[in-house]
Amino acid sequence: MYWGVMGFFDRNRKELESRGIDPNRLPPGQYFTDRFPVLHAGNVPVYKDLKDWTFRVSGEVENPFVISYEELMELPVTEVTTDIHCVTKWSKFDTVWRGVSFSEIVKLAAPRSTVTHIMCNSEFGFTANLPIADVTGDKIALLAHEFDGKPLEPDHGYPLRFFVPHLYFWKSAKWLRGIEFMNADKPGFWERNGYNMYGDPWKEQRYWGD
Image (cartoon, rainbow, N blue to C red; front, top):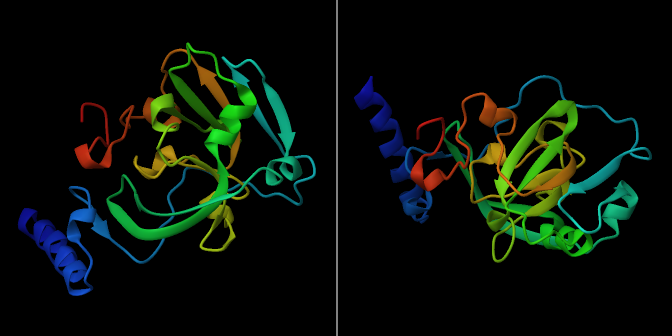
């Protein structure tokens, strides 16, 4: 069994080489795919329309606020092309995302100097914690509303998904409804259920103790 698994990953990397793609883009223990697999717990939210949808920014900020979807879509849009890596071991290369840079939210909210982390708050009580250093500065962090030139599909987070591609993809919280700025770390939904608090693909930080 062990050698069979190793053989699969070796073949997958060889296929990348045959396509002229550097296999070193794959973190340890990952395989690439052209598909976009779906992983979530529970139901997918259904919206008849977004007229009552709101996005809330709260916590350790000078300017907490709530905005509508229409107001959110009026903010500047950023497009990025980057690789993504799921904790279930698949990676997808050169994915194209569009949305509002998290830096725009930072400008509006004015976080206090004591902020160390944020919590993404999503539909059905799903949450994901992130260090503020991983969503500011030169890090890619978007409130994404498009993938591959189209609005997000419901399974992938419509109408809004937090997007932070340098960490395992569960940190890119689907169905985002708000951000809380915090002065200490605390686990989100998946972290309370056995996933690593940070989730670095290059260190294989998948689960507690990794």
